[in-house]
Length: 237
Image 1: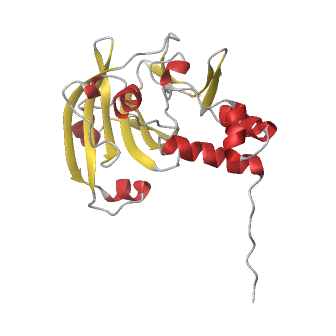
Image 2: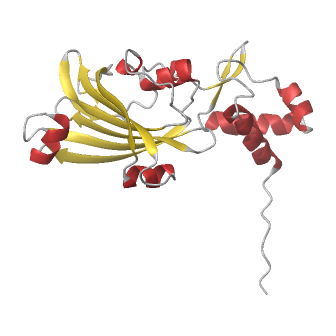
Image 3: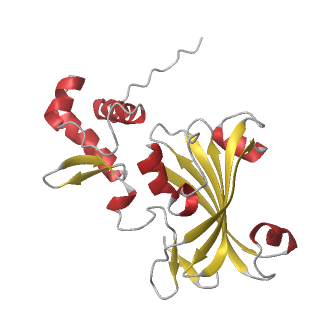
């Protein structure tokens, strides 16, 4: 009989998981500093050195940020200098666009199979679908279609909430922090089928981005499909 191996995480890795759990359960608030290293050491029963190692790892991962003389915080969209910290596009003149959105529809629908698979829910389970028309400096650029976990985003409203930066909205109004995303990029040309979705002229070159967004506990709560004109834009890598 084959014996199973027990994998023991290093102490700092266990502390990282414990910090993320406290943040995920909102025991520690996103907009407030984390406890001091000495207080965390007392709470977890470890050395300050182990706490420092864990916090440094979370800083390197882009989850935490130290603010001189203030403390250590969860890294917010405000800490990046960008209106959207996951922004991938830039204008060809080097400037960063600030996309404006016109919310077209916010509805609860049965989860499509591809969305359900990524969210690890059953096909047909209810999800929120948010459809927005996107523009930059008055010029229409495409559409943004987001599927959201219903339990996480139940309080989302279309009236004014979904016009701007959704990640700002998630953090400030709903208390939901998106820790990381995975983007898959394709380059496509608008044909008749795509035109039904984005209503741009036939032959327009498009960036098509499929985004999977996760919480601190790695749970996927947003699947987003972005159709953005490639005529005046480049990608930041």
